[in-house]
Length: 77
Image 1 (cartoon, rainbow, N blue to C red):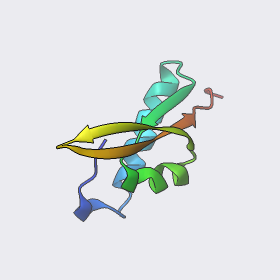
Image 2: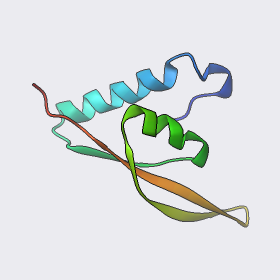
Image 3: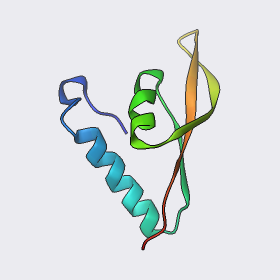
Image 4: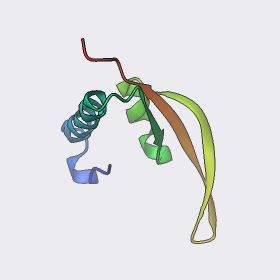
């Protein structure tokens, strides 16, 4: 899921995220594992995810540490 910089802060990311969570809930999923861009980690933390680790990736010869987060999906009431 990506939001263009010009659209950030307008609720687009929140809407996309909540739609994905709702679909996962309907499918019976209990959690969502997120491998985040480091700059988006704050968004996912704000949405209620918690960090469980990181993965190391190499992109164009540069090492990047990507946060890994878990978002717990509450069952349908």
